[in-house]
Length: 187
Image 1 (cartoon, rainbow, N blue to C red):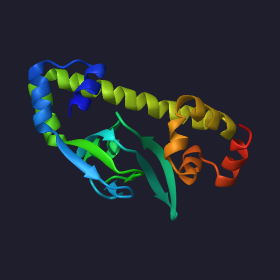
Image 2 (image 1 turned 60 degrees about the vertical axis):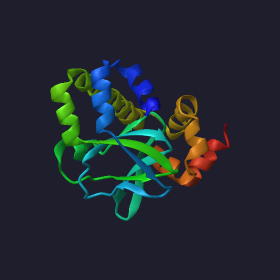
Image 3 (image 1 turned 135 degrees about the vertical axis):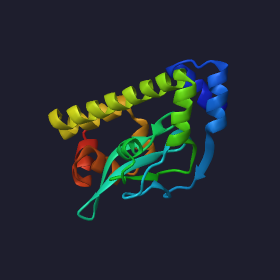
Image 4 (image 1 turned 180 degrees about the vertical axis):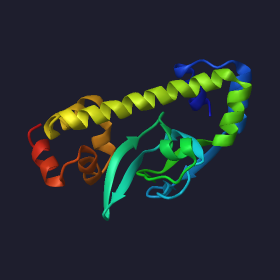
């Protein structure tokens, strides 16, 4: 839990009272590789902090899994759409490795917002970082070639290649495994 506090304080330092209230609201969750944190059509009622491990978010489209994000240590994770709206999720969240997460329910988070405005600011900053990553991904997908996307991943997130199966990486990049193999052979 100290790991979480250290990370949070990099975003926005919280006063002791807010830190204690937050820590008392968190629940530790330990899951094994291939387990699901969330399946589509379920309502996501928690925001998670990933202390250890790796996950992926994916959609099912005509029987095909389309990976659209990965999360690793120090990432906040949720089905943003479902968590925010209270409607069923349209995505799945699956563990790629055994993982340790800290969770907080939407209700507990709302209560913390009311009692500790610093926590509201902290979560707003985390949401902003999420939105920036989402927009970068959208822009990259629209304007970069598959080779440029792969090269960008190598520069910004080389750990993905070490921890994620190639099939998921190809799906994430929007290309076939064969195309990914051809691109990889050029590096």
